[in-house]
Image 1 (cartoon, rainbow, N blue to C red):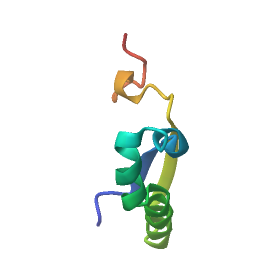
Image 2: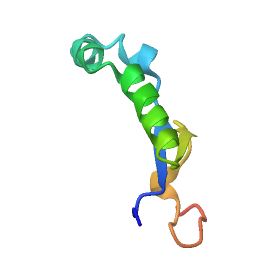
Image 3: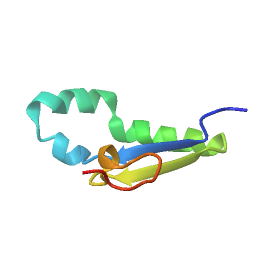
Length: 71
């Protein structure tokens, strides 16, 4: 059985990041939105769960065991 059943990605503000001239070309070359579309398609095709998390969700401050926010 495949170990990775859920793919969770952060919903980034790509349009806002494109305003940063240092990042804009790299983001454009990678085609971030197209990558996310393909990732979602492939995950669903393989029966995996694809979920986007809001960019303001405090994931780095949330306990992975009890899901409480750690301060």
